[in-house]
Image (tube, rainbow, N blue to C red; front, side, top):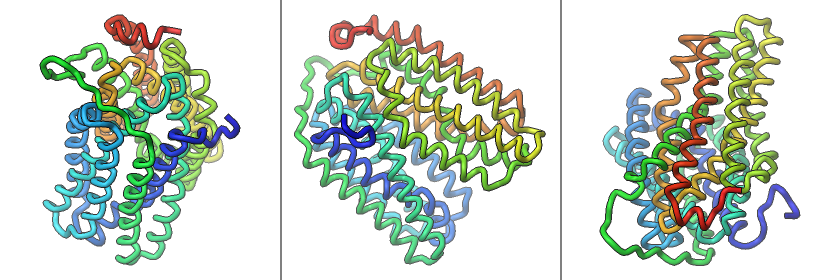
Amino acid sequence: MTNSLVPPAGPQRVLALAQLSNSVGDGAYYVTSALYFTHVVGLAPARVGLGLTLAWAVGSLVGVPLGRLADRRGARGTAVLLALATGLAVASFLTVRDFVPFLVAACAYASAQSGLAAARQALLAGLVPAGERTGLLAHLQSTLNAGLAVGAGLGGLALHAGTQAAYLGVFALDAVSFVVCAVLLVRLPSVAPVVREGRRDLGVLRDRPYALLTLLNTVLLLRMPLLSLGLPLWIAGRTDAPAWLVSALFVLNTGAVMLFQVRMARGVTGITSATRAVRRSGWVMLAACAVFALSAGASPWVAAGALVAGAVLQVVAEMGQSAGSWQLSFDLAPADRVGEYQGFFGTGVTVARTLGPLVLTSLLLGWGTAGWLLLGGATLVASYAMGPAIRRTHASRPDVRLRVPVN
């Protein structure tokens, strides 16, 4: 690989360009949507929060059937249709002026996004050899962060303008970005649908070992709202560190993932190395939580130093956990149900985003140092509990044992 930041030419690069396209639009959407819905649409903040929570709950439920649809009807065609559906859902936000239409549009947006994520994973599995998937996912994560950063900058310009036209332009940009994503996905080779004989059952929902693996991974993902919610509230309420550090820590995390995620993923090549990566990330996350806790009651610059050191440890843990979980989610899924299983595994992200704010605010603001240590301890326990869950899942998969031996 000649450039660690650019995937090889061919399907891998096209997938990265598609990721870049819609992440630019999403970055602009994320930084402006709350003010758009409250200031332009006129909804109360509590109703916006309720609507988005309900929407992502619906999205987590439909991710599995949409992933199954990608397996059975073809991953490329399903991904293209869901990318267009996402763009249409974003465009519909431009016309809503009341809570019920907003809720309907938000549910459509979350459902299409969840299904698109599962379909793209199935498409990736069909086009990229097993040994190259984790490396490509690392590239896609770097691309995602780069696109979000660019989009956030564009959204910042709209916030600075503060006009309705500027907000509408951001939403139009996000809608167009998903159309561009769909056009890029059309350029990929098609992936033949999987034909399965026999009765239809609950599929992944009956697969207890994989369900346990997904649950434990969800615990590890509770750190997701840390930079956007947990640390800002901690810095403001429990430390004397300068407020601008919130932005600096976000930039540090985003830049580190852009530059080092691919390198961090290179050592993850199979089930055993993925298990080790997840366990190491548990220890590093525990250390990060302990260092974050040291910032309470310290002088401003000592607190700032502890927060920066903790953020460095946290992003190292994040990159290791991400690489390990990507490898495991693919390697332990049946070859004929990748979309369905990826749709289910991806619900962990939605659950973490939904429950994470409540968990983090309760632990960190309510319990202080003890809360940080409990968060780190829970992460370490979950990372080690994944070992037996992985072995049990691997043992129950004759096709996986032949397809992906433990390295």
